Image 1 (cartoon, rainbow, N blue to C red):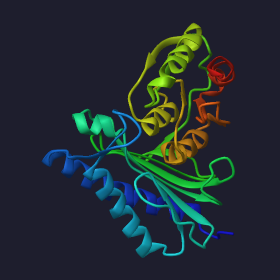
Image 2: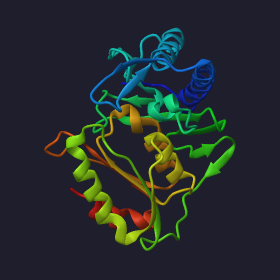
Image 3: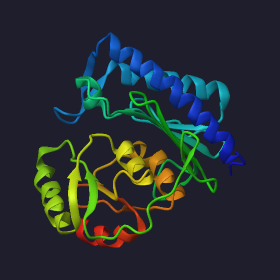
Length: 266
């Protein structure tokens, strides 16, 4: 069992996210090299993804050598301390590759295994380098954008909500994703697709959108931002995988959550 202080872990996440974000921004200015394509044409990895994750992993090894590590671009390490770091070095890689400024570094510390259904989030930071925005939270200590405390809007109802979503990489799942959008449209003022799940989730916490839904996220996509949502007073749910093996993430302000949860399933 970990005895780590969530505020201490939060500070580590903030420092590393900022350092990693600066590296990502520098590499973007120098030009992007696509290192590999994974599951589909849009599922790409840049050399910067790998370099940024290696930097974060190296720093964590120095600071907390017995902690576990789960990252998008390298092998997992369970560690022995009971704390695991869950890292997306560049969330929104396609945006990053094309020069669209909506990408982020996401770093979370969780207690327990690398399974988001069973872990307890302790701290997290999501840094958006192009906007120099640092979202962060620690368990029981609130959610913040820089030094401004975040509180979701309690009065928003499920009538005319601004919603965000995303789509999976596998073309076989696109019809289902589009059908989900159609089902939620009766409560939507409009739909946004920004291309980075961590930014979408932090946008719920910051009051920039009223809800977010997407099927097919990986643990590193939501580990930090889910805590930021709940510490800001929002609601978050991770629903079991469907027959395609993809979990469904729902996050929203309280007045929108239940209706969105109903409409976005299956």
